[in-house]
Each structure stands twice: as C-alpha cells, then as structure tokens.
Image 1: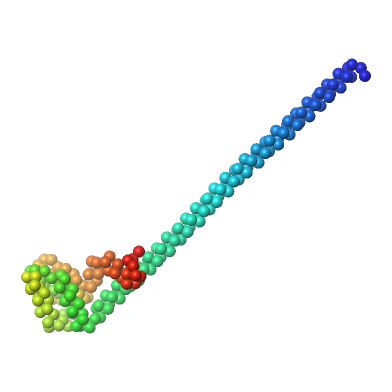
Image 2: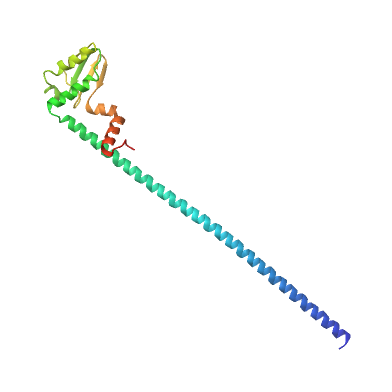
Length: 201
C-alpha cells in the first residue's frame, strides 16, 4: 500500500471516529434533554394535580359551607314562622278568654301602666258592652296607691282588644298586638324557649 493510501485510510478512520464521537455525544445530550424534559413534565404534572386537588377541596368545602348556611337560613325561617304563628295563636286565645278572665288580664296589664295623675282608660267597642261593673273600681284602688285616679272613657277606642291609657296628651296603646310589638324581642325569645328549649337563633 502506498503512502497516500495509508494517509487516506488514517483520515477516513479518524473521520469515522470523530463522527461516532459526535453521534455518541448527540445521543447522550438527547437522552439528557429527554430526561430533564420528563422530570419537568412530571414536576409540572404533580404541581397541576396538587393545585387541582386543592381547588377541588376548596370547591367542596365552599359548597358544603354554602349548603350548611342555606340549611341554617331555612331552619331559622321555619323557627321564625313557628314563633310568629305561636304569637298569633296566643293573641287569638287572649281575645277569646271568658269575660272574667279577660278583664282580670286587662286589670293586671293596666296595673303595670298606671301612674300618678288623672288617667282615662279606653276600651274597644266590643269590650265597652261587656265590661264588668267592678272593673274601674279595682283599677281605681291601684291608681290610688300611687296618688292617681282612673276613669273609663265614654267613647270606644279604635282597637280590637286591650285598652288605651291616657294621661293628658300622652296616650299609651295597650292592645295585645301593640304590647307584643313593643316587646318583640322578649316575646320572641320566650316563644323560642317554649318551642325549642332555647333562645331563637
């Protein structure tokens, strides 16, 4: 073999070795890129799944809280409705008391509102027709204890039950509904305790 052939063979062998080195390095680099890409993809997937689980848990918790709040609102609305119904039934029951018990109730209620001075008590048209003869006498005894007087108005008051108590220009509506409305919270609390064994929510 001539010298030129040997040189050409050496060059060819060196070129082949260089090509193999380049290919090997390229394959190694490609494997590294693939490995890094897979690691990044796995990290991104894990992060996405983590956020997705957290978002799902938050959504579930929010929906549970919303459902719980709605249930509590409905229970409260139901309780309020039952309390109002109980109050209405109580007012109706008070209106339908026998005359004796009814006017005894009015006398007790009036006794809490009497004061010194000249008072006038006005009854509904219905009650004017059935007021007991000793009703004013009993109230007068209570009024006298606090240096006051009380007399029955000749004119009927525009109320369904109870009475209106007047001292000069000051009048107090003591119809059953007015008394309840004036003490709404206390009445509701009492009704709640009776119905549910606790103060209303």
